[in-house]
Length: 204
Image 1 (cartoon, rainbow, N blue to C red):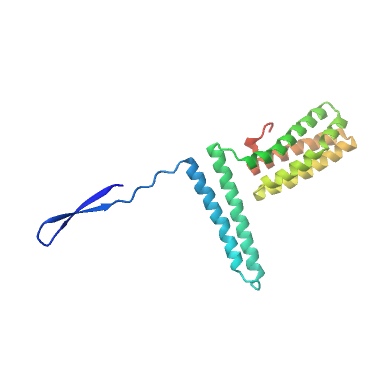
Image 2: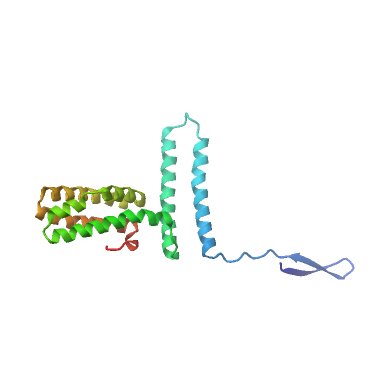
């Protein structure tokens, strides 16, 4: 703790010495402290709307309740975007993000495999590859990862395309299946960019 010495005149003309303790300067926060502050602020931001909603009486206008819920959802979405950007910038690992990316990476592998089969004009094999639990797992993961309106819109287009791809492959229409496949690959890239996960995936 630093001390400051000030000279103050006394009635007798002498000077007395007064010591004042200077407040310690806070240390510059490191990366972990910055992350802690970010998550702490997020907790406060999410806790506030809960308290606000608890204070609204049951007979209050429903429109006010809906507005409060919408504001809370917007804050949550913004926090997810900021946290993900911070994690990417600092090179940190988010376990939840990694776990959600596993089904996405598997889907990319399956689509690449079916693409090779279509290139060999083996539409029957491609149809078999395109059918499986990986599509449902991919859809669940994409729902979690799609935190923006753009990503959510891209998700709808992507899975509509996958459904069409599976249908044409099941019919054995090689030409239509190839055309649909190209469209699905484009939709997948668009979704990954909108969701902010393209840089975490291999094969795009």
